[in-house]
Image (cartoon, rainbow, N blue to C red):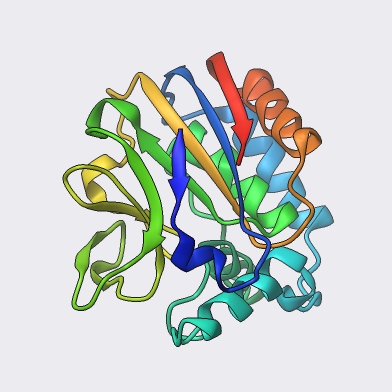
Length: 214
């Protein structure tokens, strides 16, 4: 279970976390999934839609501003991904697990965190990054996480809605995973979780274990 700190709750933003746990076999070249994603980006993705129209993105930006974190400099990961496609850049592929969750971010606007459960030590808190706190973000180098909402274990912060840490990232050897769908609106519900689980069951070798919304 993840405990949400009172400091985050005081923002009055409707914070919810959709948490999915399970086992996977990572495939770095999933042709079926790549075809599905290419069809989506070419035929269905709306390049002209204002990304701020996604409720979770607009609420997430409001959340960042409440804690004096510039949402244009430290963008939500979902916003960054949507803007990438809107600028005409191709959707990058990492592995089938990351790729299918990027689809969730593109279609729903949620930042999605993905973690190797075996690298998480102790209890997890969802808290505000402390003064001068940093970690090495995936694809970003050193990231200043002060005043960002972060996931933290006994070692320290390992995930945020801007970029996750390399410490708990997924690689081809990962087996036990935790997915966290970060929501700042009132639209997170069981149907969102079911949709993600169904997508993973369709395109991945995935053994579902549990899910919850907090």
